[in-house]
Image (cartoon, rainbow, N blue to C red; front, side, top):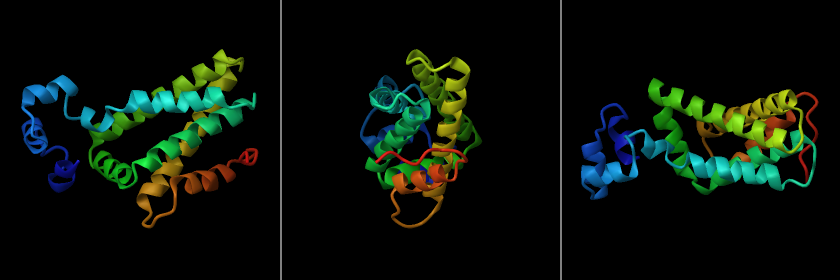
Length: 172
């Protein structure tokens, strides 16, 4: 991350990353398929965390479930603190990384929709709800990383969610 921030993603080589980490390139490639995976390697854990929250929500309402999943996403990213904001800055600096991030968000939306459908929500409604709440998360995260200060991501998410027409208030 330091190298990406210091010299830019495109200018950073795998050899430099490996050297900074005290590894050989061979060892690097045992852990990561390419230098993008340094930024996206934890997405399976992220998706699993969100889906666990969707499934654990006691409310049968798909909106409440999707909202809870995205709030769990905010909670997880908050544990990374400044690292989440640094990662976002690196991704924003590269069209290739931005495209990859959008692809990961689309996959998250599909996973949430599939989970909702598995729990009995009509598939089309499940897809619409998932897209809506992943969208709320995306906007909240974007606002959070671009705003100086220490406001928690969860607070930004709740503020954005409150602006969604017809959305029920957050569960207490």
